[in-house]
Image (cartoon, rainbow, N blue to C red):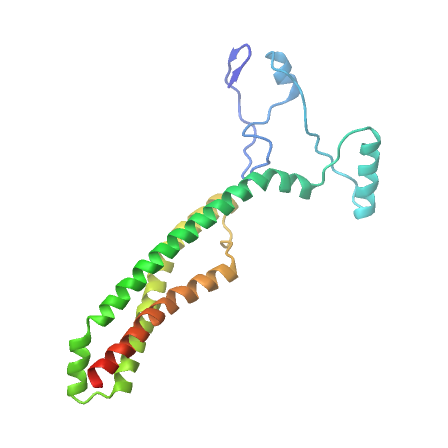
Length: 209
């Protein structure tokens, strides 16, 4: 560690698995003074007696009486994560834009592929398939395509989610947002239906009409 009087090697006595929001290293005040580093504490962690919110409020009032600012745990967490929240929101919007671009490309590919099956559908109609059967076939194929895409995506994403979850939270279940997962899953499955089925209906009408 580089201090005002030079570089020094210190012995690590404890490693925290979770971030404390106080920086990467914690050293004692006497160590800082011995090596000429300024000792200017800016944060004091205070633990009140157990007794519920009333005891906590009484302790906060006593600290404020000393003309010192008081912040609860929730206030400190909100202040520490505010910049990260804004960055996360920007990242979310960029990711949504990327997903929209991918969805448009996939939908365009599905439409062109379905439209290019005109000869195949016409041949099936000549061999006895009814228009309803042809539309049902396109519908089932679209469901199979959406389900396969969802399974492949889930298998691809799961190792990364588990790795990040174990690295940040330890050996616990990964934290997921059910609404977001449900919305993305429905989008993946509905995209082939919305792109292929209407196109298939138009093609079937063209070859059977």
